[in-house]
Image (cartoon, rainbow, N blue to C red; front, side):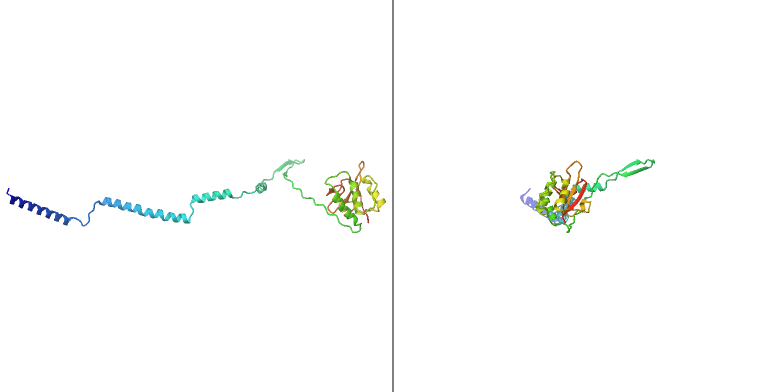
Length: 256
């Protein structure tokens, strides 16, 4: 083949190729899509997953934690309150249990054969016994009340079997008598005071009715007896007592 013929053939080939390229460019879309519709759908789903849950995690849970307490935190707080709560006193619990305790009854039959029952008492709370205060009698010598005060100051908690000795000392210290009585036994104090010191027997047989400062003399068959002075709240000799002697009372004596 001659050289001019080869050159003409190459020129025609280039024109054909350029026309084909121009035609292909005209038919091609303006933007090139490298992925198919299926892959685009997946990409959209990925965007939804990565965007919307991110908002829910960063915003909504934050509001919930800021306004409302979680059940777990409430449970912990209630547990702490239950532990730190002050326990109920034991005596209150016992009192409550006693109040609901049923009353037991004892059943028995009478001689006539009748069946009866009575409540069983399990607790006994005695009432406090209040003794009457002694009255002040203005008709008796005021030094007797002073003798009662002196005897209280010198008395002991328990008896020392020296009642008449302590009463003598109190009467002498108060000035109601000017010498010491010579009788030894307490039951002889009444006769000694009446005969030698001007005492009178008062018209009363109840020791609690004796006025403050009066001298109470008690007898005994085979013992020395007892003597004591009435105070406002009780009786005193060599010891203080709320109650009078259990011995038989011979009389209540005072100097008028």
